[in-house]
Length: 137
Length: 142
Image (cartoon, rainbow over all chains, first blue to last red; front, side, top):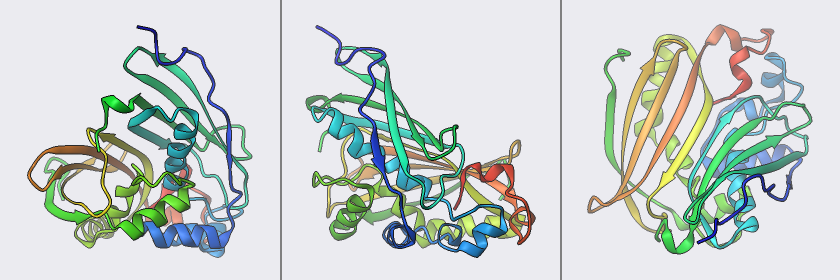
């Protein structure tokens, strides 16, 4: 059988945001993450940020629809991310990814979320398998 | 909490609220009708868990900074279904971290998934007004 994807394949870039204050407030309410750092300009300024940072989980979670749009025949079985540096409210966020490993049963991709800075804000990874192979509903 | 004494919480019986799951999906840009695999992030705000985390941070005079997050599934979550979630909290000293490992099972014990939440513990003084952004806020404060 052939591999599900080719190593080195780039995922189509996805742009999310820029998120404004009401968008971050909505995410805070829905997620239950009430940390004021994401919502309070003065608090963010107090620790040296030009604007409140976007919730890291909001960006990590956004990889799921990106991956589904890329390969709807595959289901995500693992998704993880390290929040490397803040991406601030008002920044356009580019989600990107690349296939690092692939077999006939599994695809492993490296994921990045970039704001305006050179370094990524989130470095993630995901493992995908054919929907028939799980995770089962 | 001692660094060498992990604390077990639960099992907590938690439900995937269909309305909240769809609202969460909207906020992350998903529209396929499935429960987002990151949905259990909302369970971090469950008082039985968040109270323990806030108590630890209060005792240590630290602010938790969300450093990393991982989800691994054997089966998908279903809207309206209840699950048993058992959380183990453990501390690491170098660097200072609080790590929550959550095991999700169906109510009859079948494995569903695992979640790891890693929080870097940053001295509260680093967040006081006028302080420079601490290096550890490269993550996101929780």
